[in-house]
Image (cartoon, rainbow, N blue to C red; front, side, top):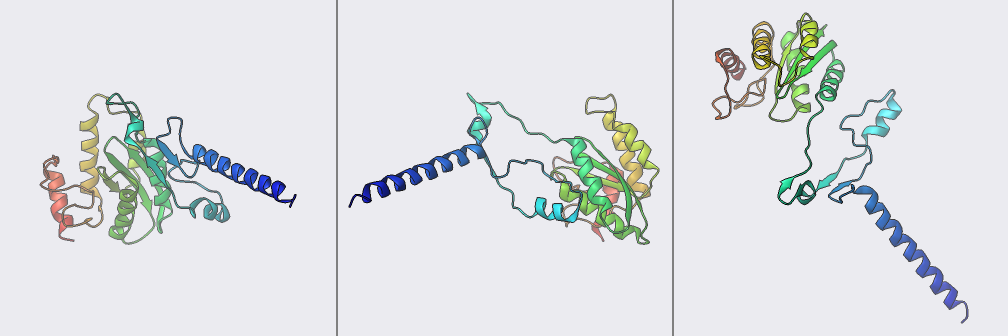
Length: 225
């Protein structure tokens, strides 16, 4: 009968250790204010790897995050803000683009609401390549973004020169709009996303859209495809 007490004590000790590990594991998944749960410590949205084995290791796991609105506000005022790292997004789009068949090089400029992509392709079907590049970019950007593309490599330097601007730069909107019109006129944009959106992700007839005539013409053409 004397062995019962040590056994009970050992069992209790193991249970206590397990509970402590569970609590610590839960704490490891939360941020400092306890409002966010991250299963994986690495928060990079897209992962670049150097070989196939690392690729499988980095991309096989599911991702999960849970936020509480109370953790982002204090006394009714928002205290934390989430934004987009535009350079990282441009890096992701260009990296995904050159992995497409027939796409040899890609340059990407990401503004506050557009992604402009110039690429060099070796495929013979311009429309098919344009559709691949456009759909790939649209899958990577926030839903309110519009995507414009060109298979003319001469835009590489122009996009790079505009990267020095920001949303507050003088005439930034006018400069970007002019470039967009040039890209729309000179290069295919791919097939329409659906009946309500053209290949660039522009919705026609929406209250929050201010498409000019060139963009409307582009929409009408792609809607028939």
